[in-house]
Image 1 (cartoon, rainbow, N blue to C red):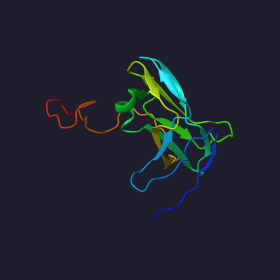
Image 2 (image 1 turned 180 degrees about the vertical axis):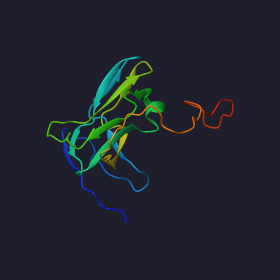
Image 3 (image 1 turned 90 degrees about the vertical axis):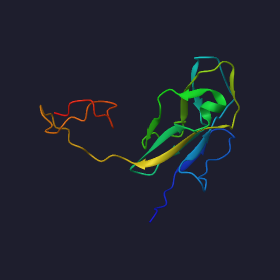
Image 4 (image 1 turned 45 degrees about the vertical axis):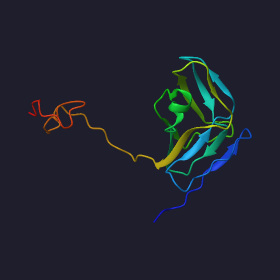
Length: 151
């Protein structure tokens, strides 16, 4: 059974409002202003809103699959993790990007990213040890390989 959650949203500009679409698992976010970038120039693109997430949730901010193809930008922190305490009236969401093309123009109100909300990780205990007691898998990038020692 899907639980219905509420996200309170305060807009700081006249962009199209956030909405969940019927097909897709994320909510699109838009550039709140025109953005012009040169090759290797970085900036934080304002998304034009602040919000209050449901208690116990975080938001994961990602680029849309078409963002690089259309604009030649990538999100500089790979993805953003926005916690529920970032909820003040002036805590405006932004997407940090870098241009990998020259003369990039992103018009105001263009969909450039998306976010999903997920439940927070619960409390964990971290225990230091000298031996994990398991066989080695072969290291980073080793899935499916057989040319390494497993002991």
